[in-house]
Image 1: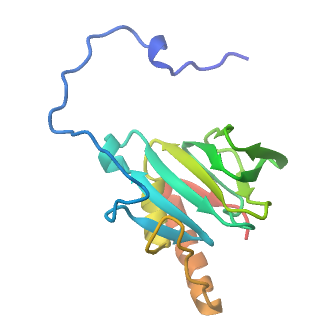
Image 2: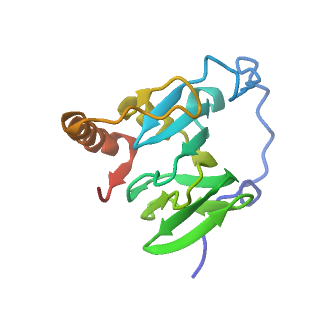
Image 3: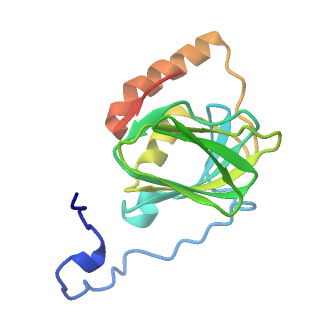
Amino acid sequence: MQMNDPSITSQPAAPLPPDDLQRDLKLTRQETDPALPHIGLVGDTYTLLLTGQDTNGRYCLIDMHIPPGGGPPPHRHDFEESFTILQGQIEATFRGKKTVVKVGETVSIPANAPHSFTNTSSQPARLLCICSPAGQEEFFTQVGVPVSSRTSPPPKPDKATQAAFIAKAQALAPKYRTELLGP
């Protein structure tokens, strides 16, 4: 089977475009920057470190705080996603196969592949998530709720709030090239 090689070295050599002086360096300090958005979603807290606006749409970078038992339900999406574990561990399910991913390890999820992850340990996990191209952070902002810090838990929803969240997530998922596969 021939693999498509989309890397920059597979492209014809061409002069680099000029520096875009409209774009500035972006520095984030996730522990102390009060302007960073912290989004509560499915019991987890996601801090948006770099958005598509910061990277010209090329990728987004999200600091994820996953409490014990936390993590998203099964889903898939039409963009690349990777997680580097900074603290704790998760159990990643990829196409039905479970793999434990520990501190210092990185997992890459190909576009369109069904996956989920769960923090099966008794300690919080911290992940850096990259989605390429950007856009997933916009979905999180639309369906999640603002919380005060990187480790603040989202409020526990009552049944009506949970039902409204599920309906909203299902309605918005196609716009963000995402398919929700389970509860």
